Length: 320
Image: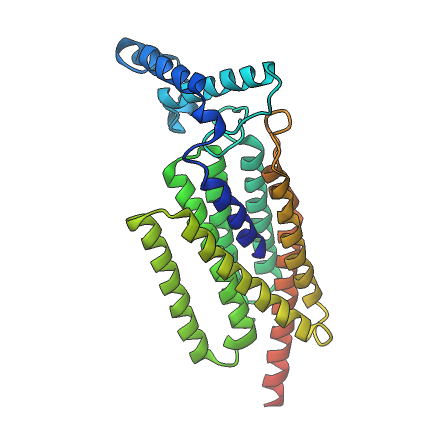
């Protein structure tokens, strides 16, 4: 929810550096990659590389050039450490030790576990909340949107390409917008369906324009940063305002307050930004791991709130 906005803010700042970092600007790195490609990535050498490359690596899209970059990255890191210098970043990322075809193993596993937690809570929601609950379909749709985002987050951390990066960004933006829509349904839409329909159309238009601009015109990290900060702040402010207004009447909204505040606070973990421990566990992976129980808490709030709305609607029906 709100945490996806904070994540996008931090990711966009890092991605803006992705076109050039200290490590990939080093002559030793560039010379190493050039020589590696000349020796291994053409003619018979390329055929030999492909013949000995594990099938799971080729299926994941790892090429000879990618392998050269990976090996030369560690050559450069080794030289930095020998000279007593700080570990550099490469293409906007810290060096990670690859496991099988996983480029960032810890973040990939953590993203998968976030998705798994969302799936488990979706199944629980569908088990305990009747379809007749006013928020049922909106909450289920939000769960599927979240699952899709965590799927692409897992893919992106498994294999960073232009496509997987864009899908990770776009799906994260979709989660934030759907969270705003979810809040709109809860606070306004149930009483004013016409307003909800107009607002839904506006959000869809915003998402379409956002994705179209970044896909067809220019992938502008600066614009992406500003856009997601703006919608993230709207998301946080709207949920918090509604929760604080209703906390005495609806005790379960305290769960939502905790979720919003925790996600904002936990996102500060990324500001630590240190080289990965054991070349696997960095601040971003730790943040992903820490959000798993928060998603469970948010779906618990949705379940409680949906059951409350169902009880309220049934009572109103009996009065009528």
